[in-house]
Image 1 (cartoon, rainbow, N blue to C red):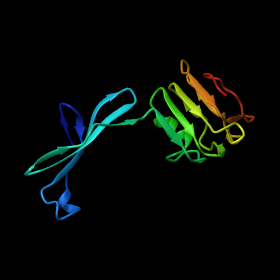
Image 2 (image 1 turned 135 degrees about the vertical axis):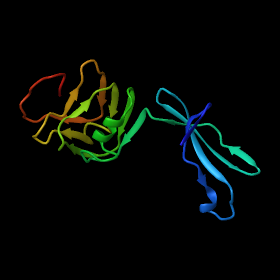
Image 3 (image 1 turned 90 degrees about the vertical axis):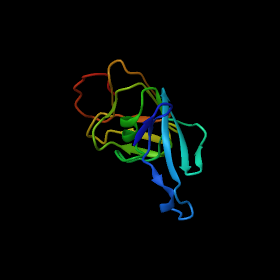
Length: 162
């Protein structure tokens, strides 16, 4: 890992000849550049004794994340995405069925939007063991396109809950 003045952190340098013997002395790396809110800039670079080639500036938007799993906690699940989302992220849930919470309530501690495919296609249930959501004080959560199934559990209110 290293840094440069225009792009910040660079990846580990890889000798491309380890992948293709015909590419001796070619070094390939990527650089992660200036990060504006929710957008990461990056580019690839390759060099050898003849010179250097640098790819175009590309971006990756981290404010739009997808959920494709009904599991309670694994990559691609709603809990996983919410725990890794930046503030102001829009979370699109493409999974169809019921997300049965087995690890407690979902905590929303930053401003997010959660959008499902429709209240008749997606539900979140506390599985008779927990509340469904806890939205931290001062946080704005816009939730649409899903059904929240509240179950009968004791309510010890510490903040807005559903």
